[in-house]
Image: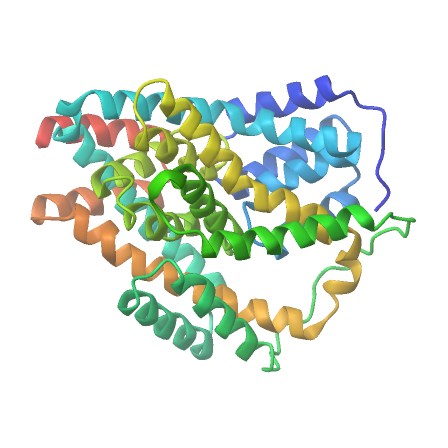
Length: 398
């Protein structure tokens, strides 16, 4: 696809900052906002090119809406435009969640309050909704349901930070040998051919895999704790297939298992993350700030945010020039066919532990979750309203 110029970095930042402050509703809603603003209103990109970029961002791991924003920024002003788009879209929610983490950590009485319990129970309902929605699209047949269940059992029995990458790799290799009837691409758009200097993309792809290997080898703790934390968030950002909610189990296996963040704080932050606009990946900002107190909390948030989004940059700009060839390969499609089902198994395992086991203690909690789920699914109330109401109701009940 030909990259266009003519839009200033400041204009890109302004447009994406507005979207970062107003785009509630998750990745699917974000994509709708992007299309309306940049295709229909500003005419920054045509519908064909927009759909092509979207198909790429849904193919590679990472937050699809954030990656689409980066790609749109790159389309208008190269790498500077991509960075401006990402920073502007991410900044509002990252700041809000960092401030929330500072308040939560510095006020110890809040940790035992009903508000915290209310936010945790809202998080349970949100994860259940995400699982149910994704199950219909990612595991519509028996074979993929079986992959999901077996993967969930594997993740539940093998509580290790290495479990996700190992299980997903095995499933991807096995399913790549399987001929799937629905693996044919429904993408009818081809990139316009242009001469692309491949040194940059090759460097990006090489950096992605080198950093991933290094991150898996870095041990936790000791005098290199900051490096360990950056590695943990980089790992999580590298393995997210299937939507932003999948980052929950990946982060839980990294930061809670390491003892950096308590399970209660983790789930409360995840509940609060539903109430802010922008990408769900800024949950990492909350976790980074929660691990450190005082001014260091902001540096922790910045480190976590940068590390979890870095794989998205490297993969997007590494794969972009090769996308028209990759997407036509049946083995690639078949591998993703199985990996997406295994990812859902990862989400299912985490839904049980720690999301449900850590939050639901009695019938009152169960009823709270059921009512919240009905509000989300049946009445389709805005998530931000449900989070606020959940915190208030928790303060009154618990």
